[in-house]
Length: 274
Ligand SMILES: NC(=O)C1=CN([C@@H]2O[C@H](COP(=O)(O)OP(=O)(O)OC[C@H]3O[C@@H](n4cnc5c(N)ncnc54)[C@H](O)[C@@H]3O)[C@@H](O)[C@H]2O)C=CC1
Ligand SMILES: O=C(O)[C@@H]1CCC=N1
Image (tube, helix red, strand yellow):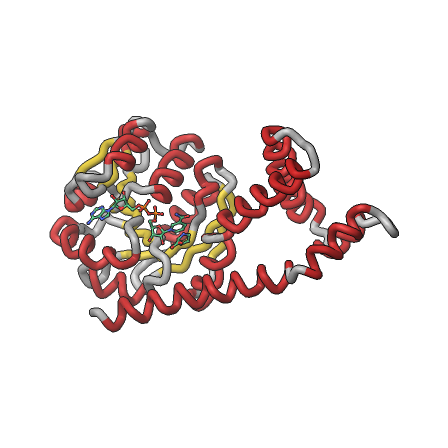
């Protein structure tokens, strides 16, 4: 069974760990995650899946074959400095840190270390994640295959060139948050129109799941699927008119730009501080 270590056992680390276990790729007893001592939530979340927590980053590396870097971008270098003495040839490193480039990670680990940069999202927890990855200069085909297997076990996974990573972060990395806000807003609207809140959340969430599944399964253009719902002079047309009037599309497009730019800024600020 795969021994997986998480440098940073927070929300993203826990989502992946739980998904990998649910997919049968590993077991809790083969997973270890580090966190800071005051972070009781991370300790409890890994305990709940039968995994080990530690405050020692070298211990994570020593206990694992695949090491996933899942700390916040600004602490990646500190954590890798601590872990460095424990890194051996057998290790494959996968970084999910937003905005941190392969070059920046490769500079922080021993020369020749196999590194992959990935961008997953938290629905990995329920095996409905969307991930992409890019191989570093020393990563080989078998490393790419392991990474694909890991991320496909918790959703869909695509290999992409590195220049796309920031935009992917803005789309699928951050995207669940945009959708949660949409679900909340849909439910708020429905409650305003008289629906009980529990029913409103359930219907809103299933509507998002169903619409997404329609795009994936039918392969029809989203515009066509939208047209199929929109009867002449009907309720959907009235709702869509209001959304367009309020700048629905431009709000979403602008959010993608803001999130992508934030990733680029993060990469630059890490570069400048090194
Ligand atoms: N949350 C999300 O939806 C996604 C997050 N990511 C990336 O995953 C990374 C982690 O994000 P989250 O899980 O959301 O953050 P988080 O704050 O939930 O988790 C961070 C973890 O790092 C630990 N940590 C902090 N300093 C440490 C140190 N010096 N040594 C060892 N552990 C330390 C914390 O105790 C915590 O367990 C980030 O780089 C983020 O860009 C990527 C995709 C999606
Ligand atoms: O907001 C963040 O920084 C991370 C990256 C993608 C999702 N969460």
